[in-house]
Length: 121
Image 1 (cartoon, helix red, strand yellow):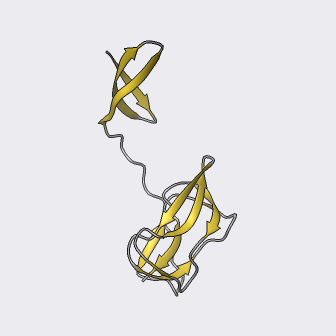
Image 2: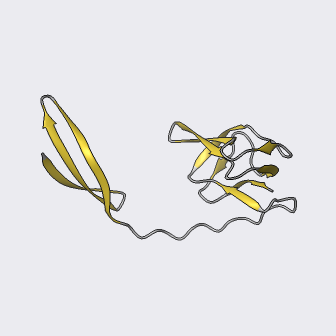
């Protein structure tokens, strides 16, 4: 088994690799030390019809699909939007049971981390 220290985007990882024949597979990877986080971008003011729970973009991406529209009842974990980031589709889900109060984005729109995508009550 070989141990390596790898730095990715400022995060340091200790990785142990077991050599078995032609393949080498990582056995464990855990952050060694947390990198300081950058200041969160300022969020735009929510529209007047906004609900009490905000659903924000977790990353930079483009809205591929709006699944739940304003007024729709959703359960915790139901898909509200589909966000494409780095050629992958990411489901944006309801954090709790409730009703969608507003959808603040449209299909094809680019979003930044922290941007309010939807609100719910």
